[in-house]
Image (cartoon, rainbow, N blue to C red):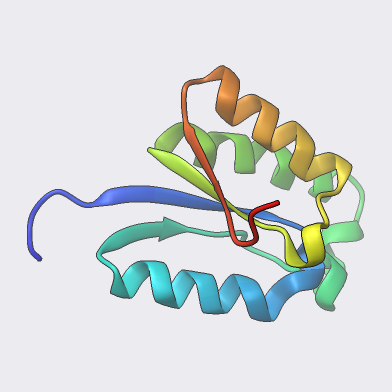
Length: 104
């Protein structure tokens, strides 16, 4: 399947690191370009919590959404936190398709 690839940005709580990695792998093997988070703050990447870093990463993630055709929300157990809710709202406002790991 060589040709035009859909670009998908992963969104969700960084506490779901394993699920992020699994979704990235699956979506890539399905023939998509996958953009993910750079750090997993809730899974041990403590650099996220240094002054100004989380704000930069949050803004950077919106730019990743800008580059995508759609977002894929990692919502394990239906969990969607406030940051992810904002990303979903932003994606919808900018005309992106929003898909979920778990429908509900």
